Each structure stands twice: as structure tokens, then as C-alpha cells.
Image (tube, rainbow, N blue to C red):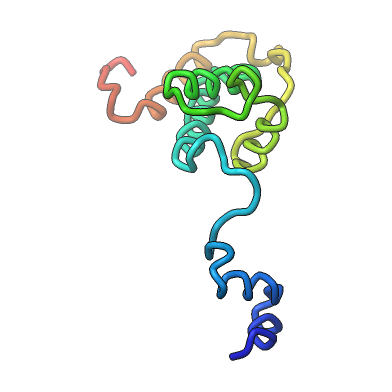
Length: 141
């Protein structure tokens, strides 16, 4: 198959195919500047944020940036950021790459949740036991 045919068949620019065939660019490589954290590190960071939110300790944008700063500082790897701390552009890119994470404004506790009843306490412990799974073996729960 010729370059033109492949370009039309697979909707890939002819120049991209030509560059790949000539070895000017690697197949499957991403364009742009390389990421500071590896894909695995970003995934672990996103999972940590989601886990903390489930436990009721949502992380702020500043805490996320501080955490990345600590990772880079402890690892001693070079950083393109000022003082090795990422900024809002990095944060926007991170959030865009991890759609399971969202930012939201804090909300006041609804009056309905402010009233503590025995049923609400029981419900909280049931949810907590389900969250902890097999780790909780207390017969009172």
C-alpha cells in the first residue's frame, strides 16, 4: 500500500506516516514536552486523591501541587517548574488527563445531615464497615 493510500484509508496525515517510515519520530510517542511524573506515578496520585475524597478528606489544588513538589524534591529529579513546584497549568493538564477527579467548591453541611439520630449513626457505621471491607471484624459493627 502506498503512503497516499494508507493516509486516506486510516485518516493519518501523509507527513506523519512518512516521518515514521524514515525514523524521524517514534511510533506511538507523544508530542510535546515530556511529563514530569511517570504515567504510573500520575495514576497512583489520582487514586490517592480519589481515596482521600472517599474518606471525607478531599485534597485542595494547593495540596496536590505541594504533594508533587515533595515527590520531585525527595526524588531529586530535574524539574522544569519554578522552585520545583508545578503551577496551575500543570494542575489543569493533570485534571484533564484524569477525568475521575473533579474540583468543586466547599458546600455548607445541609441541615438534614446536621441532625444526629440513631438511624444516621447506624447508617454511618454500615457505610464505614462496607468501606473497610474485611479489615473490620468488630461484632458491634
